[in-house]
Image (spheres, rainbow, N blue to C red):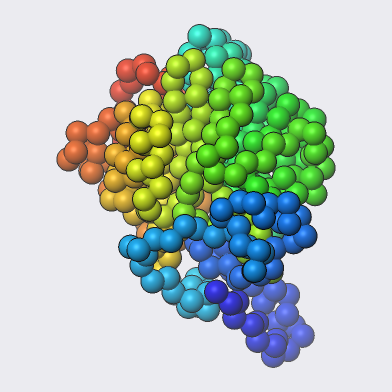
Length: 379
């Protein structure tokens, strides 16, 4: 996919506005699947043994998918973000947030696994007494710029400076709504170990993270740290943080095993046969954090519709379906409630145990809970 060139500015007075608009477009298009193709950097040579990597173009690739649907060009995606109107994509009413304190976190039993929703795909986990982060984004915007781009709908349930010491930090890929520079830079020295797909280690090093703290994984590779076994598993997505680095790093889903329980995190993914492979290899998940948001017919192969999310959940043999990748940023054209409405209706129809936690809510894996449809009635 090739980026459309930016036309020359008609007058010097218009240039700043056009640069701002182009920056927002880059962030939105990357989140939605419209970044431009580019060359991998030199670091990718280390990864030529990966089945996902092709030396001829120095890029990572998704496996062949015979059911692949056509994706629109980058120009059409960009044009739609620029010129199409949006309705209901940003909440009018305040998103409910449950504040979380360090004392509340420390009081959670150490003989269980707990998941705290921070927003979008960001989660704080307490796994048998030790704290972990998944795709933490505490910044105000998911964008290359601090002053323009998709802005969060709600505050985080606790501040970055109130986080406990982090044993492990897991990243699914390098897009701005999953890899946040201000968050990573603030946490530098406060995280024992980073677990990332191939190539993402270079991103972290550029942000000041020490190389010895980073472990990079290809799909199906595993490691154990602080009593948790982590396995990088396949996903169908793409990567990149600028116009010339598309697919220079790998993307992945993850399986975390702690205390005899399995937690699956889909990362960002379109629906593909890899979910069935994951379910067959692991035999089921106690909790499945499944992407449910930022889908569109213009980019059908990199994000899942709610119907596909349910199918992927069934493929990985999940016990509880936990929807993520929604309610925090405006990254597509569906209403902000649509992922939640459709997923809850499907779960009810199919008798699936559903988790749609309020931001800041603690879910204890394997424990009964009363699921709240918290978005109902909000505009």
